[in-house]
Image 1 (tube, helix red, strand yellow):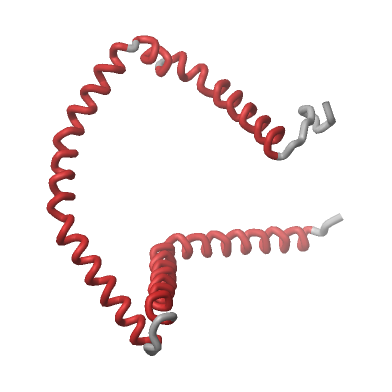
Image 2 (cartoon, one colour):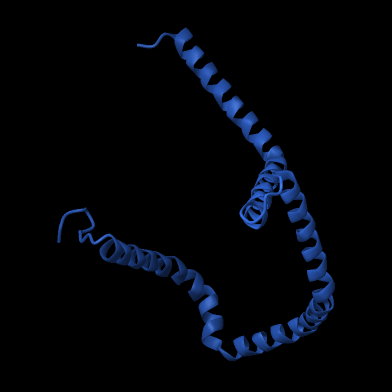
Length: 161
């Protein structure tokens, strides 16, 4: 039998661990932007170094720092050239898209209004049938995966058919 003081000690330890977990969760939540920025920097540096090694490591005997600097310079030039050449076309396509979206939504709304059964399906009937149909689809997909991909045939309780 557990004594009262030991039980109190266990509760206090559990509450302390819970508070520590909550504190760490809050810190990670607030630090997620910083962690993503650090991860992005690491990925970018890996990309630059790999591209530099591909361009200059095999074909020339430039020092590594020079190869990275030239690679960065070439990427900046390519970035600006891309946007200078394609910015007018992208702006025009964006303007056309903004003009056509309301018309497309209106056409879609008209087509949906002509399908009365679709309106009924998304109404009460859709709500009523959504869960069983989703469950049946999930069971079907899992059965097909287990039988076709894994090659196992078994009943619901795991016994062989």
